[in-house]
Image (cartoon, rainbow, N blue to C red; front, side):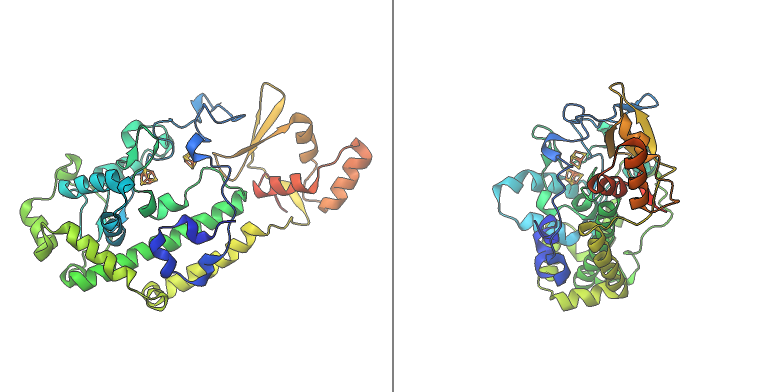
Length: 363
Ligand code: SF4
Ligand code: SF4
């Protein structure tokens, strides 16, 4: 089994606590090279709901997202001499030259993109216009993969541990996002303290795009120069210096920089990791009243609950057994009754899978 660290940028190997050396199952259901959400490879999937296709485009997959890269990951990418990263470096370099969404702390999407993204979630995986600029069309892959950020490192459309797996990866995303914010601020504080002292690292809560944002115009020269000061025109050098500062930190220094929020997120992660790798079937189960039930033409039934992207297909006869779980008696009593009255049973492995999908839930 791989380690949690194996799914993260290699930089974190020397920075994160021992917990990240724990094993985590491979997310085999998210078959990215033959995308499980694309029509050509999504075997047995429900094709549409209310006439709207559930499939993702093969030329976007789930990369209808524009990452917000922290300065030190940009620096790490630019410093990497491997030939296969040349294209990613070129694309990020182009983005830096555009001066749009380029600051000492981040290389991020334009306010216009963010506005569209926040308001177009139903088109996730389906709109070519929202494709990530670092997505490579011919091979269908990511040009900056070793340096992808929190969201890209932790998103899967389906999880082998179902709802518990999703909770684990979502909380890992929160931990990584916190690390990105704090470590990028720390690097800027060393290299350009005026930026931090002027509060430019604080998120813009209004998130209202300006007219220039809507027209995808870069910051006017004067404002850009004021933002970057002595580093204007030397952005690549700045990002590489950020990387050097962060990779020189010790795990103890990182822990201090992440503060109490980091301690709490780590404790939550430890608990969720246990839930994801050692699931236990609750003693009393009931059918989740919010589970979606779709009868398929072949007589099977597709059941979903924890995620719109992950359904379980079962024979219709099995559904007639699942509805017997009403939360009024323990699992073993229900199974005994099914054996006696219907000469049928649901094996514990199937019940566990249904519980992981929260089609059956704890009563
Ligand atoms: S995680 Fe993305 S690329 Fe991978 S299988 Fe799922 S939708 Fe496809
Ligand atoms: S950075 Fe890579 S993984 Fe993330 S959205 Fe872009 S292409 Fe996909």
